[in-house]
Length: 112
Image (cartoon, rainbow, N blue to C red; front, side, top):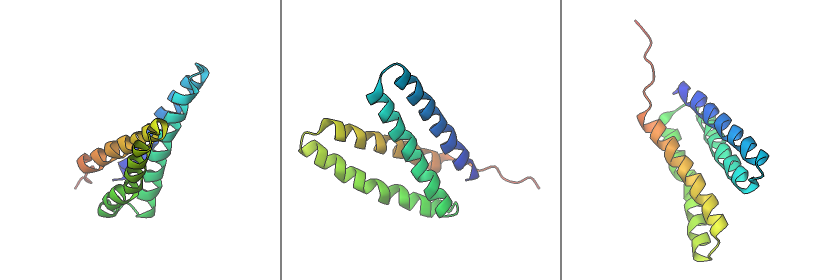
């Protein structure tokens, strides 16, 4: 799973590059959403490091951490807060991408 850090770093760089382009175009709201995406990749990169690459622990955090975001999304929808709901959906979208990567990533095996 060491490739996970590289994968997160690449996604974070992509998000930050998009953020810069959007900001330069005066699309500050969209730039802020790209920052949120980058932050979520950063959160789970940090979690990965904290759990020392233990896949089951990482997968557990991929469930426990977004639970609060799911609650926040439901509350935002209940109160008609479209912007807050959009932010929570972005976070959950990135978590889904991370889950997919973690579930499907095949680590290179050392050669004999």
